[in-house]
Length: 591
Image (cartoon, rainbow, N blue to C red):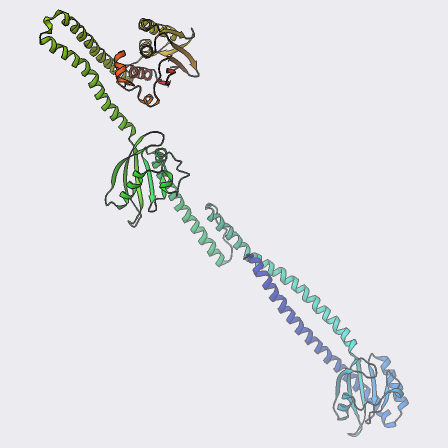
């Protein structure tokens, strides 16, 4: 239904009431004036009739009809009235407007009948002679209490109507002016009433939109003033509460956003209530777009759904660990508790999530490291122990066997020593890196790379592998030459070990933006994709049996990684099965 403004709800009714009241008053006044004027006209007719009566009486007594008719016509000419003299038998003996010879008997006229009874006869009717409505007044003419005739005076109603129309016109003109003035006054009053309400309504709309800073103007009317003051007071209270709520929400959001733990709150229907940024990162969703969605729509994980249900039904907080497989395996530690409202009623579940993937991976690396180092150390130790036992059993007295056994034991001791040396080197690099003791200086790269190639060239020549170098003469970087040389030597050694004979190993260096890239490219069989993430772990081997045949301690790439980190850089590998591998050192160009 269409709504109307208060102005148009008040103005038309008030104007209608005013108009109807003024119309009723005008009609009443018009009727009153009409009756008053008719009474005045009748009174004037009676007065004129009484003035004529003394002049008519002697002429009636003398029965001088001709003289009587002359007098009546003269009187009619002097006034606007019609005068008629009628005998008791109804015969007209004189008339101011007509010839009496052609006039009919007037004894049946109402006013004449009433006058013949001795009363004043008054009548408004259509004249048979003039064929128009007339006002008649008839008075009896008496002589010694005997009626000797009737004098009648009359005026046309049209004449009276003209006079009354002029009066009506003035009355209605005045009434119209009064209506206009009343309309203006009513419009002003209703406008004055509606304007404060309009301002109050605008203020209420601003309040509803959250703009509580502007106050509603207080009008002069007491009732509206109280309403405006109440709205302003309400706005002040709401503003204070909103500020408090906003501050609390900002503090809460700041706390939730700053937490490294993911916080998830869901209601009893598993619809999301709150998700902080850390939780969004863990679940790999945007917290702003998933609010009020079902947790099953956000992430499909049976273990998470089970944990939610378990927390909802448990009497104490619950803990568990789940695995998320979005873009790789991630271990998430969950702490869950019931979400309670102010009355202590359970309205949902609150989860706190911790990403313990790195911890679990470190634990796995630690376990693998312990297992690998134990295995790597056990192999030469077992071999040495076995040959010692063989020698002790009598083989020492067999020169043809004792010599080879001792050579094998020496090689295993050297291998054991090399593992220990690499572990010590790795530990030293880590310690210097943590303590910031690795000194870096601006040095040319070509000399360092050439020295690394010379160290590895002998082993490469044994397999017929040619090592090439590409490095601009003026390329410099902030490096520690001995450490960088060791890292490049390890990469070249790996390339030589796992490349087929008569191939090429390329060493390249170039500037790329704010970095220096040092690549070692081989033409080996490549590395499978699943091994790449763990390739730089200690003792990690892609093919343990083949790796031990070609030699190495399994610590070379781990040493390369930590040397790169000591240079504030990192190392990457790009490999395709059957097409070789590319190891790249990313070092900063500036200090």
